[in-house]
Figure 1 (tube, rainbow, N blue to C red):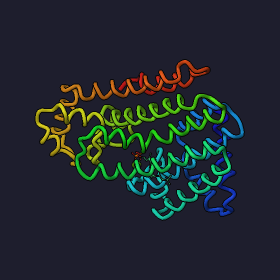
Figure 2: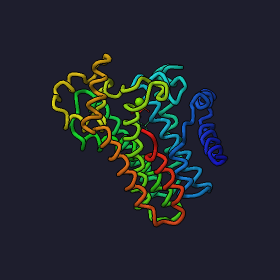
Figure 3: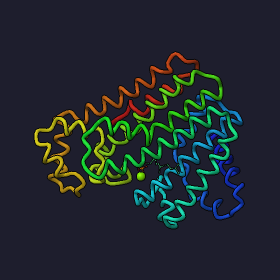
Figure 4: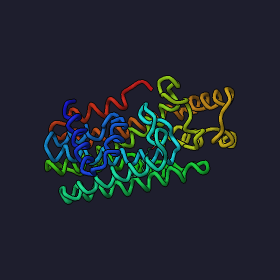
Length: 299
Ligand code: FPP
Ligand code: MG
């Protein structure tokens, strides 16, 4: 999409203001990813000076959060390339995140007041979500409510705010678009959590079934915990590098208890909530397509 190039140019323009050549170089080291949030904003608000600015602001906030997340997670790759913390060091990743984040906020402060409120409020949720995520990996979390609240804050809140802000820019029913964005974000995270189990290492670009080893009790494991006979054994496998027998046990149990199947159903149900919220709106076909592509797939 040609217009995504315009968003990238806007980000470069926003960063050039810093007048410090190193940050321009760092920006070039970042891979732009799928730009899901920008695609969503442009589908809702169309292409205008304000919508491109909103996309740039949201992508800069998202990139900043990932720069900090890679330090927190000690990650060595991001979007198929070495992460900034791996390429440089933790300090650079944090400082560059701060620069992107604060430049985005300066621009946001010049935009529509309601847009500025909803986007900045989502960043607080994002930060709380990240803290919850770290806290929930200390010991086995068996609460679905906590998991849902964490993925809402960490992943869905900025997508929700992006959709809402885009609707505000063009005077659409922002409540409906917020519901769409929230559920798209929740389903997106659940699908990601399911694919960790169902896809192989080659497709994932990282070891399969690694979330549980990393301490993440995602939706399929939460269902499994409630249903499996020997849930103490399940707990004993938590945060452990698993051997083949243990992995096979997990796979069989996820299938036999229908924990995996029902997790897929739940992601699809949440996807339908997103579709239903905007289906009567004008020009909602593309938004419905985006949601369907995420849930109507091979798992
Ligand atoms: C990725 O999660 C992390 C996020 C979506 C949010 C991270 C948020 C912060 C660090 C707080 C906000 C900070 C600023 C500067 C705006 P993940 O680790 O589950 O996913 P991954 O596999 O993509 O790393
Ligand atoms: Mg991470």
